[in-house]
Amino acid sequence: MNQALSSIILAAIAANDALCLALIGAVPGGDSHARAAREMQAACKGTRHEAEAARRARQFAEVLEHKTAVQYRGQPVRPETAERLMKQAQRFMDWVEEVLAENQPPR
Image (cartoon, rainbow, N blue to C red; front, side, top):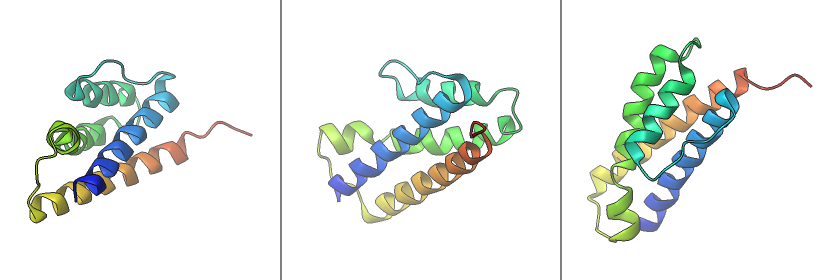
């Protein structure tokens, strides 16, 4: 279970990096997960996604909250917690995909 959750967490981080790169040309720096969520919100500031970014930042932060326990400590995660994290990560990544689709550079 932890391996699957670890992959999901890393996928959410990669999605956040892609979003920030597309909108501001840089990925969040540092090791702070809270900072990554704040930087995502800042990247959306002034766009039509600004209001939704606050909700999505909470989803992203909830997923990241479990990163250390899952990836570094190998702590078991209750099945209902794992299911919630998977759903939150999927919702976050679906939203990022929508934002990225709208912000594709012209060909």
